[in-house]
Amino acid sequence: MVRFLPCAAGGHESNVAALSGDFISAAIAYTGERIDHWVGELRRLLRVRPEERRGKKKQPSPQKDTKTWTDFKSTLYQGATGSANFREKIVDRAYKCALSADIRAFLFTSLQRDGRKVWHALKSLARPVLDCRILRDIATRHLQFQNLRICPVRQRHKTALRPEYPVDIINAWHQLNSFDSSLSQAKILAGFGRRFESDCGKSFALHAEMQLFVHYESGAALPPTLDYFGCSKKACLLCESFLQALARPVAMRGRHGICYAAWGLPPSSSLGTVAALKDLEKMLVSRIRSHLADSGRIDKRLVVPAVHQSTVASAHSGSVVQGLHQGAMAAESTRQSELKLREIRNIQ
Figure 1 (cartoon, helix red, strand yellow):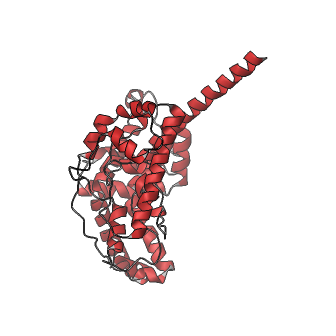
Figure 2 (figure 1 turned 135 degrees about the horizontal axis):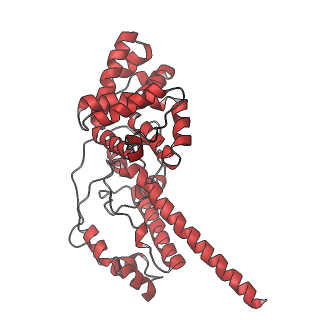
Figure 3 (figure 1 turned 45 degrees about the vertical axis):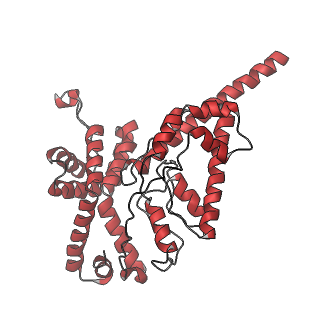
């Protein structure tokens, strides 16, 4: 990237093409597992139906960019997942499809429900090339981005709670909420006791956002000019809430809303860090209390298992959780409306 940006903004076209190829190849190799994931998704979504294989039903295709689409589909099923040549070829074909308005319209109209999923997977597969083009445009328009340095942040070792800290879930809730804990709440939380104990005993690594925060707070580097962390994944609930609670809030590209058990920060003497953690604690207690009060129970379907931050799932599972939560809220709202209607009828 250090060599690519200055050349891409004002270099000779042949050098730009060569550097773009090198940069894209490096990006594809770095995100190889993610590319293999989207290839698998597209193979599943675009699988040939039995009637199409027998020739009884013609496979639909775009009106104008038919060759671009057929080239992509033929490449999708010919290559061996995991090979560098196949990854580069399929990403290039996906990029050409992602530029086509005709293919987008075809997917949304012909494939009905799966059309949006296929389009999303196509854009995700084409990300290495799309990102390269976006970076080139940024460096061309904003000269300060043509000269940059890559400063690796030293990854910290995994850590775990000391043996004296883990407690059972009932005592933990009582310590957090001593003035408003009840027997009914204890009964509900007791159902999560075994999982709570297991999660407290596991080691964990700092999330990327927290590693950046510690890196700057420790004085290892000058604070960034912009209060913004540009991570490749959306932030989890705890990272986003903590960074927003700081005296100088740090913005991010968004959050996926999942609350992971494997989350933490190293001990800090900073008053600002301690205050932000206190605010985070209050927010979590309020959310738990709200769930206990509103539903009378916690739906275990909404408690999502931990997902590694480097996987594809962490970028998309937030929509699943949000959908489940919205569905549960809608069902509860409908139930309450029906109860009120019955009361009115009884009064009349």
